[in-house]
View 1 (cartoon, rainbow, N blue to C red):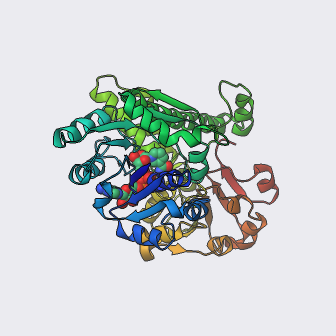
View 2 (view 1 turned 90 degrees about the vertical axis):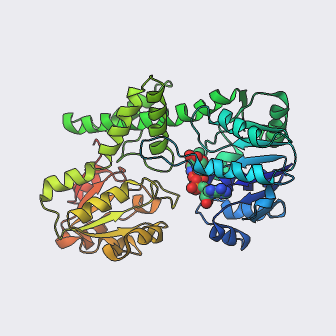
View 3 (view 1 turned 180 degrees about the vertical axis):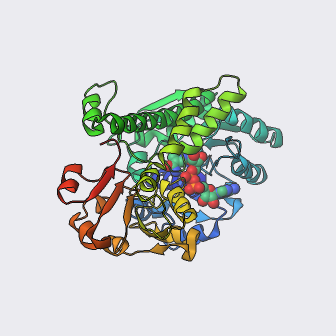
Length: 433
Ligand SMILES: NC(=O)c1ccc[n+]([C@@H]2O[C@H](COP(=O)([O-])OP(=O)(O)OC[C@H]3O[C@@H](n4cnc5c(N)ncnc54)[C@H](O)[C@@H]3O)[C@@H](O)[C@H]2O)c1
């Protein structure tokens, strides 16, 4: 099939590469010419495990362009552009409609427009009405096909997806979507394939993401209470996880979720529930809890040091989670902002996201190339991302390199064993232990 994917971000690019890999002729279009130039030079604009390998494997079926003429002659157009939050929490659909305007202008035959971006319930219907009102000469149908990949494992999550959800309202569109994804529903991938109406498909995405965000916020609150009452969250979550109804995933406490999805998707669903006079109060609380959770280490730091002025603080881990260079809604950024407000001296380290942070803060903070350099003479370390390198770091070095051997480590991701840290004489604060 001839497929166009609009948007070469984390979702669009991975989708394009995988669809090309399984045999479709795919053109990926983006308005960002820098990204397209990189891709045309065989380089990936994002850090994602195995992406380079699959870019090369799919090369013969894959092209990259900024030219809207690509929308002509396509069987399927997949919209994977961003849907960031607006100030009121609602999803900004401008990018989706920009693509629609280009489809209106350039499509020249019947086509299925697939919305993969996360969009509020009813958007697919609105998009269909919009496109049909402008192009009655061709048959445009719309399918909802939400994405569930996680950054860091995006290629694997697409090839071996937990499920493919397709929402449509007519047999022909369902047929085309089935054909598009057929290889992934067979050996060796065997991805479960579910069909439903468009609004339900849109809701699956929000309901899933918000459920996961709730699970994280719940366990963070339990962890905070563990700290107060002398229980250990590690044992608590272990004990909980033996109940199959609860499971062990997303039961790890920390300094809050970030990334491009949970923060905006909780806000968007809450906004949608409010305007439909059916406010989701659990989701509202979840948003608040997460906002507070991002600052628990800083609260603890201030409790100890009182003034943070001129304090040398090191942040280890900048990306919102390991295995990605994405900084969107990363707890590290809120903490850097606050530390600068308190006039602390901030040094940061991340295995791959440092250059992105440098673009934001310039010379307001220092950038280290190794963990050793980052913690040298530091008064306190705040761990924000559980990179393997940080988890495997020789903790003796905290004593060796930090200010006068008085190591203070505030660990927002529970990377180390508190008993070992105590034995080493390190002041160690982690979440719920
Ligand atoms: N990132 C994730 O892990 C993830 C997972 C599931 C769903 N989603 C959803 O998928 C959507 C995309 O997310 P993302 O993280 O890939 O976003 P992103 O910001 O990484 O990428 C979006 C891309 O779209 C491009 N773009 C904007 N307008 C365009 C236009 N008119 N034509 C062509 N390209 C255009 C941008 O230049 C950018 O490269 C969002 O709705 C998001 O909620 C994201």
